[in-house]
Image (cartoon, rainbow, N blue to C red; front, top):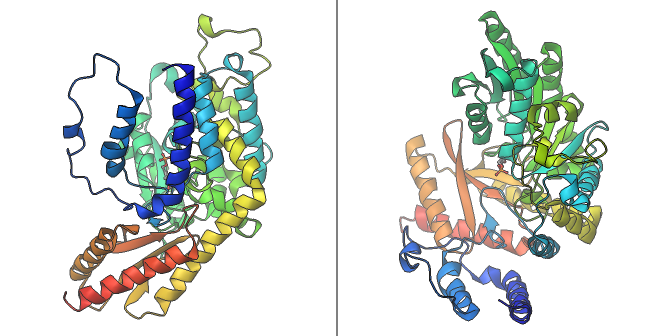
Length: 471
Ligand SMILES: *Cc1c(COP(=O)(O)O)cnc(C)c1O
């Protein structure tokens, strides 16, 4: 592709994307593609001769687009959001065009220093403790793995990197914790049986008393408690673990405290919600995802640690070919995580924070919180429904309950969900809370407005009516 063509198609695609952002509402949220359907239409071997861009773009529209699930749809109420924004997309375009591989300071000083600066901005926005320092990771899963590895090294005097893990270390997280914790525990060599689930209360938050009991019991049995993962905003119900109590226990027992606020962390930019992070001063590490709820397109996960020295000691490696004269004066982020090669992710975060301003980001979060409360109020006024968890942020867990026995209720709600999503206008997902099948209404898409939540509620009520009438 020559320069002229790049210019032509570049303009065309930006125009297409601008239209897409406006018209995405007209697409069915979830793709109706059947397994294997898309692949069966892709040639089984690569073209040996070059193909014109026109053909590639035609296939993109006809073949790929119908197979996409539209995460930026205003009817997106599923899982958690992965919301993006025009400035973020533009920055990502620049990142791709610059094509820099930002493994060390010298391989792009601006990337390293902008990353340091925007992480300091985030630190202020969330009012994180002064001494913390951070870097961008690809995902919260990776950040949590970094935390587990650092906790492991610290607990073994930095010996397990050298000789392998020789002693039984244990890790604690609530029974509502995210699956990435178990994955990390396995990868970090603890063995999955090292992960001790801690019981939760009626609000699905960790019970600190149970944590302390388990730690004492494990110590007596010759195990070595190493790390506690507290969740601020669990995936099923955005439950908030009591960080202050958990933090004090960790301090008392000299155990690493990792705080996973992958989704909910963004809410801490609101002064009136900052209390969700009370106790963060006890944390050794903290992660939240601007790629979920802060208009920064996937991937961008912000990882903060209290002691960067411990992180670096866990990951640093100094091959001759990467030594530079400035190593003593700069941050080389290759030593702050798993990857050597790193994308220039700070650029999109910088574009986003500057384009919206902290107040603009706060306004979005506040609106989502308001819409979730509104939806919860409508539910409350309809006796056919019940709310299944506290609405602490912008997630409403609920179900239809006409008094039939539990297994039948599960079938009823699963069928309701199927019918609601089959409209193509909204996408809602489910979870289980203490064994009960629950629908999750998650408000977090950038373009979701009151009319979309209203429309979702109308669809839910209409499908409920049909279902209960036996249609
Ligand atoms: C989404 C989520 C994760 C995983 O995030 P990734 O960035 O996709 O790895 C971890 N923990 C919680 C609480 C989450 O909500």
